[in-house]
Length: 280
Image 1 (cartoon, rainbow, N blue to C red):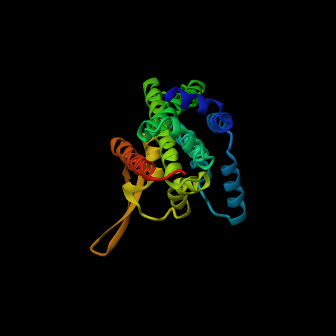
Image 2 (image 1 turned 90 degrees about the vertical axis):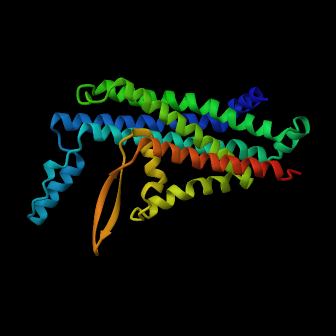
C-alpha cells in the first residue's frame, strides 16, 4: 500500500512543479545572501546605506548609515530561515494537493473498495508524504546552507559543518511534519483550497499583525527557531505600572516540541474524521 502511494506521489505533476519552485526560490535566497555578504566584505555600500545617505543629505541629520551593516552570522541565519520556511510552505502545499485531489476526485472512495482498512490507508498516504519530503527537503536545505558556507567560509568561521548538518536535518523534519499537516487538513476539510487557507491562516495572521504578543505560541518564530536555533521573541512586561520590551531567546527543544505537538493534534483529528466520514 505504501509503495502504491509513493508511486502516485511520484507521478503527480504538482510534486515536480513544487520541487522546481523550491529549488528556484532557495537558489534565489542563496544568491541574495552571497551577494550581500560579498558587498559587505568588499566595503561596497548596500542599497539601504545609499538610500540612508541620500536621506542624510536631504534632512541634514546623521542616521549612522555606515553602522547599519549586518554581521555575517546574522545574514546566514536570515538566509537559512528563509530557505527553511520556503521548504515548509512547499511541503504544506504538497500535502494539501496530494490528499485534497484524492478526496475531491473521489479516488479515496474507489481505494476503499479495494482496501477497506482506513487507518492503514491514512498511514500509507501520510507516510508516503513524509518519506518523500524529508530526504528532499534535507538535501535541498543542505545544499543551500553548505554552498553558502563554502563560498564565505572565512566570514562564517564560527559556524561548523556539524551545525549545518543539524540545520538541514531539522529543516527536513519540520518540512515532513508540514506535509503531514497539509494532508491531514485536506482530509478534514475535503477541499484543497480550503485546506491551504486553514494551513496558512495562522502564519499569515502573525505576519499581518506583527505587534501581537503571542510569546512562545508564535508559530512562525518557532518554525524559524527550529531551523536556525537562534531566534528571539520580544514581549512586553509591566511591573508596578512601568512597561518595557524584553527580548528572550527561544528554546530549540520547546520550539520543536510545540510544532510536533501541533502536528500530532492535526493528524489525530484527521484520522478520526477520515475514520468516521462517509466518502460516498
